[in-house]
Image (tube, rainbow over all chains, first blue to last red; front, side, top):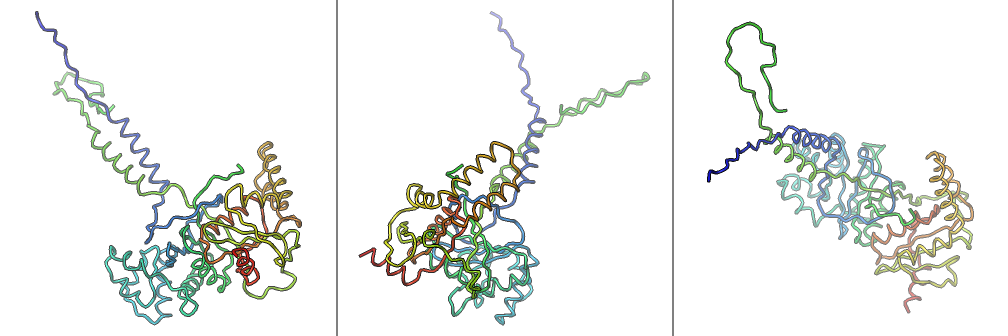
Length: 201
Length: 203
């Protein structure tokens, strides 16, 4: 019996359409994206029904982690440079230009001013670990957070204050932060939360 | 599609030309690259912006006497946030008040506050229904909402947190204010009077 020969067709798939789709999606993601800011500690924000979005600019963030360590940061590299210069002169610390530039790329810093110089000299991968157990002091005798907020307010009078705290943070730690803001007459601020379904809708 | 034909020009003359093969481009590596970048952007971005809740704290500077809002005893509610997600409340004045324990669930705190703030909550609900029925302008809606919430007889809530409360408790309590359309509330310090009330409850 003669074999029936099936002529094999080449499996050439036209990838042009797929390429189009891939790049269309890529464009979409590139345009809509705002990168997740790296936070020095993992913080789980509590849920709420509030639907107000946080602005991207003109914002100073106070991050409070589970054990109450406070981190502070403002947006804009130019603002950060002014902030660290102001703080350094206030605490009589001399920082080199290189160290100041290193501060400018950090979103949130929670280090007492006394250790700031050695902190900025650390390689970036060691920084989170170094400040995890420190945080900005908020005690009444040594309230550095107050100075940070005050300096940031002078640099950017339009900025809003956003507090992001972990849901398990004990209330006294939050109270210390709130009291600090109260002393500075900052009575209007935002609490960052996760979205939760509104039971009434 | 991915062929670039080069023999589209009409042939003129008799000159013999070498037959050109269509230039076919393999797009597979480009697709690979495209998807790789998509994956990167998908992982590195946050599409959902975090939500915020606005809060206005009372100033600790001396407030002029006429600016102080005095709550009628019938409107006042005091919440004391205790430990282990418990919350205590009482109505009216603190003298001789008896604390009642509840929790942050829909059946607990929300039910109480909604009952207390029934008139306002009802009006807000009606307004919402009206808004969805007829296409109401957002500005008009907000204005009406403000009017309703500014009701003189609406409930007034003091929120006091003990040192055993967590941040989540505070946000939950503030959240209930939002849900129950209570416009007048304040986060205040736990004073001695209420502390002793709490102590007497425990015993």
